[in-house]
Amino acid sequence: MRDFQKPGRSAVVTREAMAATSHPSSTLAAIRVLEAGGNALDAAIAACAVQCVVEPGSTGLGGDCFALLAGEDGKVHAFNGSGRAPAALTAAYLRAKGLTQIPRQSPHAVTIPGAVDAWTKLHAVHGRMPFAELLAPAIRLARHGYAVAERVQYDWGREAALLSAEASTARVFLPGGKPPAVGAVHRQPELADTLETVAREGRDGFYRGPVAQDMVAYLNGLGGLHTLEDFAQAGGEYVEPIRTSFRGHEIHECPPNGQGIIALMILNILARFPAKGDPLTADRLHVEIEATRLAYAERDRFLADPAQAEVPVAHLLSDALADELAGRIRLDRAGEPAPSLAGAEHRDTVYICVVDKDRNCASFINSIFNPYGSGLLAPRSGVLFHNRGQSFVLQEGHPNELAPRKRPMHTIIPGMVTKDGRPFMPFGVMGGHYQAMGHAHFISKVLDFGLEPQAAIDLPRLFPIPGTTQIEAEDTFPAETIAELRRRGFDIVPSGRPIGGAQAIRLDRANGTLTGASDPRKDGCALGI
Image (cartoon, rainbow, N blue to C red; front, side, top):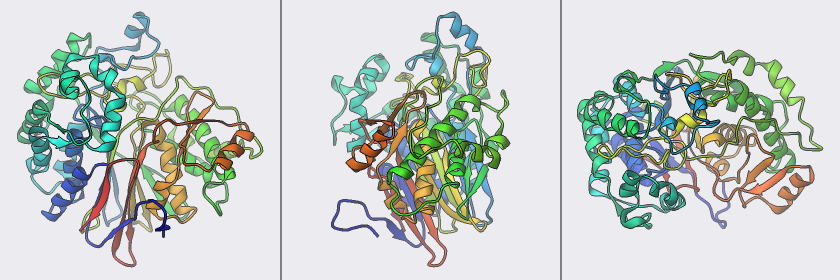
């Protein structure tokens, strides 16, 4: 239990059902769906659609989606809703233009968005309420306006230069030539029209017809190679989740091309080190930093679309590899960071978890990658595109080399914990490349150190930036801890902004209750009924 004389956030405890998101309007939309008889998946879709409106820098229809769903039968279902590169786009084409990396504000950074396809396919199998009812709250907010929240405005203001570089984007997101202030009312009427089309026509309302025509024409006008056929053929798929055992629990992740496997690798390394006492000691943080560096180096070597590259999943999750990597960690000094193809920063995303009265659990994540994605907005449909294509590499022969209809290495990862064959906790961590470390950090704090989910989320965070010597740290760490890490040779620098965000809902079988947690780094909350 937390110290009530110190600033902090109490866990939310309830009996029947619960939702936790990074925006209060999103959590409220989920709760209203649950009260109306919808299930966990229904509530997650409604919440996500709302966040595509009210948290536009973090997610949108122009992004991707992954989900893990679990019920009392213990079966965990995984869905990969990541988009593919256009059929006409190749790495050789971009190398011939002199590029060594894909620019952020470029049509080549835009893979075919997978989110809407994921929502509709998941709903067709698992949904209970009519799809149009789930989108109604988002449509209302987009058309009639929503008040800009504090963290949303913080991210908005930091991206003013990006938003001003493209006329269609500036018109929507810089009304009056500047980001809206906290409490200002913002509207997105074109996006409302698109949401209404999707509500009425389902998947085809986005991937065919006028909305698709607007998106393709806009991207083509910027030099993109996208086609109407690319959009019509877009589609995510159900996949078999991967897992590892950790402290008597099973941790489930989506398989590659997502980086969930890296979270499991970090946990496998941490399992080889005893955990006791203070979770923020220099010794423990030392191990977490080195485990992250080692696992992310493997990510940058191997992680790619398994449909077009060989990804050695069994090897990466093997005890032999975990033993080898753990054996490289020395507690007396920092190891050398492994080289990376490019520096990777933590980014914005939204993560949603819901548990309904039947104990169905939804772990749901939706993202446009960087804050405000590519900064490119299709003018008539109001769709802001992600920049997920930047996760490809242009190095010839690399497993993650850009190729036609290929999915890039992906950062967004929902998580699910089960125990004794039943759901124990849906959880997720936002923050782009940070997410794999964030998953392992959070799970270790809950299962190694016995922290409540809210207390684990509240702890200060750090992240060793792949491909650099730097380790970004939030300014809430004890000064003596940072000093000791520096003494050991770690290059600790201020993060300059909050690292990531998180939500979780833990199921208490003994009492029949739910405990929810939501990150104070965001505007959101957990609510229960």
